[in-house]
Length: 174
Image: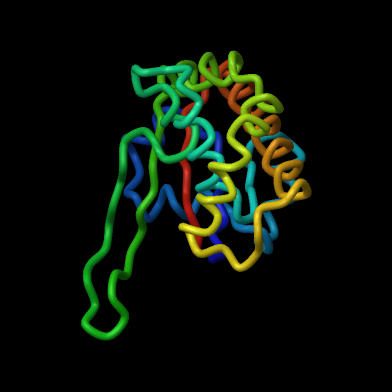
């Protein structure tokens, strides 16, 4: 399994003005020319493989029962545009959006997550989750370090977005 996950900070008005396909086009992928400059400007974030594991860690933390734990990765308003193709299956765009209040709520939740302790505490559960998701590699201390670093970066990314009053577009790429 290889699923990458991308987050893109946007002005909140775009959420109402653009279709899911148009919003998806705002989220660059690794090899898009605009990815690097947007990442350096703090406007986009991407992780290789760890999106589902980040969601698992945050929702397994037990820190929030009000749904805030779901917001940073797979939570928010789902936007879908496309159709079922008889030869290819689903063809279209599926993404999640958070309005500025959702970004602030996610940031507040993330600010209280002690990432290192949480990943260590969930080590055995993460090993099982890696197997259940069909990853081609085993859970290891190296993977734990990468996941911890990604979660720290996510916390910082959401803090900056919340401080700026930005909305968020989130996209999972298989």
